[in-house]
Image 1: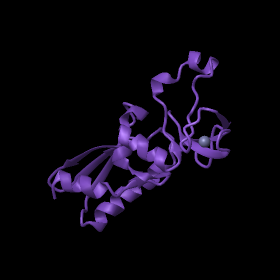
Image 2: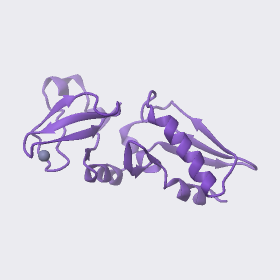
Image 3: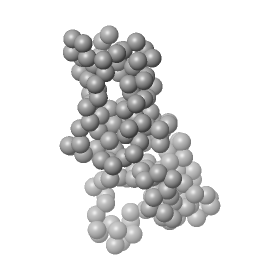
Image 4: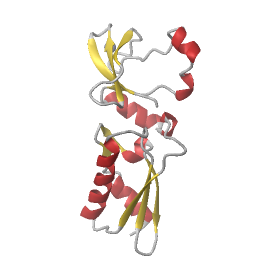
Length: 161
Ligand SMILES: [Zn+2]
C-alpha cells in the first residue's frame, strides 16, 4: 500500500471533539512513513494534555486495520508544538460551518490585545463581534464557551494553546 493510499484512509479519522474535520485538516496528522513491515504515523496533539489524543490514536489504528493495514506504529511528537496556523483556511471555514468559531491566530494573543479587549471572537452564526466569554472551558478543555449578544445563542470556540 502506498503512502497516498494510507493518507486517503486516514482522511476518515477525525478528532472526536471536532467531527467535521479530519486529523489531517486539523494539522494533527504530521506524517506517514512506510517501512518494510510497518506503517509509522506521526501525530502532534492540539495540546499536550489533550484527552482526545488517546481516542485519536485508537481511531487511527482501527481505521487502518479495517482497511487491511496491520503493523501500525504511532509516534507522538510534542515539539514543535501544534499551532492553529497548521490548520488550513479551508479547515477553519469548515469548523465555522459546524458552529464552532475557528481559533484566532496565535500571534494575535498578546497582553496588549487582552488589555484593549480586541481579542474578540466573532460569532460563527451571524459574524457579530458582540460576543462574550462565558466559560474558559466548555464541555471539553479544548473549547471555550462564548455567547453571542446579537443572535442570542451560545457557541464554542476552538482554543489556541
Ligand atoms: Zn451571533
